[in-house]
Length: 364
Ligand SMILES: [Zn+2]
Ligand SMILES: [Zn+2]
Image (cartoon, rainbow, N blue to C red; front, side, top):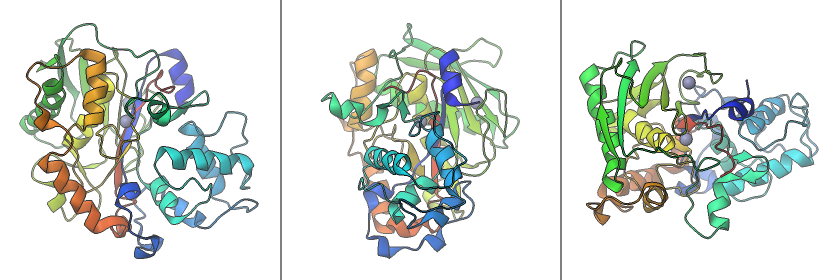
């Protein structure tokens, strides 16, 4: 089932999380080799498209076309099984590159390939021809976006519950602490409050971990790739891929695993979707669609704060200190700056992502 069909019927948002940080860590492309890219990612086959250009034929192109169609860059009218690199594909790649702050050449260069191969959110970036991630720039405000119709919660006090956690071995108390911190980050900037309640208490927001097909038309894909997805207000469903190597305790940056994904980072991103936030082109925003494995991004950036406060207003106690240049973010970014594309060794693969798909998301 496509996201489009889902979106036409409800307000589903399936967001997969992933991130790659290529676009802003940027060392020269000669600093890394695509051969270093992990084969763990479900999209690692894109590496075989390096250098592929207009007029070429390649057996992996149908996979790329399906990917670009899924995220809104190719219309339903395109033959997704065709293995030729045509004008429509080149145009779609340019738009994709614009959304991710890459050189809009329409060519499958190394950085574009690395971005494509990284795990990402399942939420389409474009709907009905509207390039959601750059809409904000066009309108002169921030880079944040909303779901179509800008749905929000009518109440300010929200409850959440863990309804399906048997698929992961994370200690229940640890889960509570991680998500508690993630919700608190959004509560600090807004008048919203979040309270955990029992699984059978009819919570506004329900959190569950699932593997593969779990009944909402957005099956999870195993390690990396799509990490999670959530629905727009007031659906409240928040699903995470139980197959990920979730790090819920300790610092994910200290992990020796190439596919370690920081649970709190993904939770903060998905909660943004649950509140009505779409994806942002701002690379430092928690609502940026991708996130590298082994990295942490939990502080709301000014773009996130402006976006959510436009929906709900500001928390009277909100402190500017929480904004963009917080110590943790700084540490994370500098870490990536040092590693850059070389980290793709386990990085392209490394990108993780949360995806939130909303039905009505797209047209942001
Ligand atoms: Zn789901
Ligand atoms: Zn997302």
